[in-house]
Amino acid sequence: MFRGRKHLPPYNENTMTHIVGKGLGFGKIMNSIMQVSAVDSTVLITGEMGTGKYPIAREIAIRSKREGPFVTFDCPNHKGNLFTSALYGYEKGAFTDARTEKPGLFEISHNGTFLFDEISHLPMDHQSQINSILDSKTVMRIGAISEKEINTRIIGATRMDLKSMVNDEKFNEDLYYRFNCLRIDVPPLRGRKNDIRILVDYYASVFCIEYGIDDAKIDQIFSPAVMSDMEAYHWPGNIREVKNIVERSIVTEKFSRKYLDGKPAERIIPVDDIVTLEEQEKEYIQSVISNLYGERDVNMSELGRKLGASTSTIREKLRKYGIAYRHAH
Image 1 (cartoon, rainbow, N blue to C red):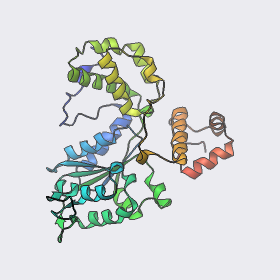
Image 2: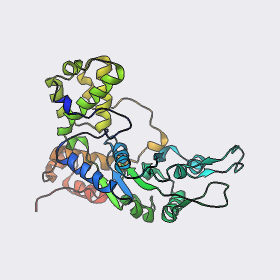
Image 3: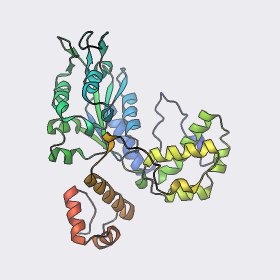
């Protein structure tokens, strides 16, 4: 059988099977999950897009002793009145269309776990209020005259550098320190090459079950030559990109190396997902350093040649963006 598929956990949407891997990086993630799931402290999960922040948050919720639901609040998709009504809920008659009462997501998550997904997108004018709610553990519906107690474990997830946002006055400092109690930093897939084979095998098995395809074809689709190409690829979309490529290959019952050309599919970028040129530059420099050097010392001259900039410019960029790197002493 292809790469020991019998050792993979069975796929079940409601059980702890969304995180698979091996090696030091994966081991650190699982150790962190075990540690934080045993307590109720606030957790901040950071990592590039597609690295698996949501599954990690869900895993923490499932492994905890809390019996309430796991509730996700997608911060970029909630603005204005939609933000307040979704989060806090409202009483009947609170506004024109409030024909019935509706509990907010905070209420619904009582005795469970609440995930602020992409917390960097929280509106600044609501951050102080949310900080107060987390402090008092109470929430008031729109149009209500009394507060409701909430006993909820809070998790935040983001691909952005919240500390830099605090320094730029784009994120509330008190809220940042509240979320940064316990922290899990998820490494990109290019730094976890040993996980690629396992992820391919896992998602291939998942999609064979979902689409009723004989899993014997997995060996034909993902041949040793294909896997060699996949392991050499830099995976800018991380685990999400692996999942999409595997699904496409299983559905069409063939793999194309064009999938690994590094060019993302054309798409319309929602306004809320647009990042600044400086943010893009920072992420690009971090990606180049990770790909070129991994855990080795950074050669400034070589890095400058690769990026088409002088050594002094590179040093200034690293300082400006607070990019950590190894260097010879």
